[in-house]
Length: 142
Image (cartoon, rainbow, N blue to C red; front, side, top):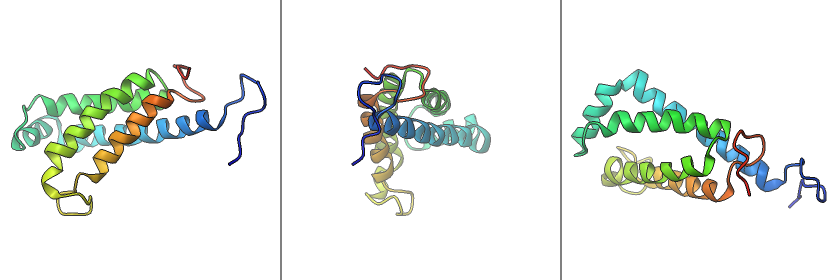
């Protein structure tokens, strides 16, 4: 594997910085899209109704939508990456358990299985360990 760092040059990102950046921005975009779909397609009241239909309090729907939108924006910017990623873990595990748990493991099952949100939760845990990476507003790598 090639290391992109150059000696002790502080300003040059290394592979971990670049990996964290790519992971942070790509997952931030996915969260933003998921939250905006809840907002613009399903609407806050429709999202609340879905959460109630799976046995959760309705207010968790719009709250989840807000967490996805704001969390996605924060991840894209690299602002409080570790904290945001840790907040996303229980949201994703909740999606796996309540939203997809009854559909089995494989996400291609009808209703979407729990594999995809659990993978996302693992990715968020890894991102919390990596930190902001290169090109972020937070710079909490160390």
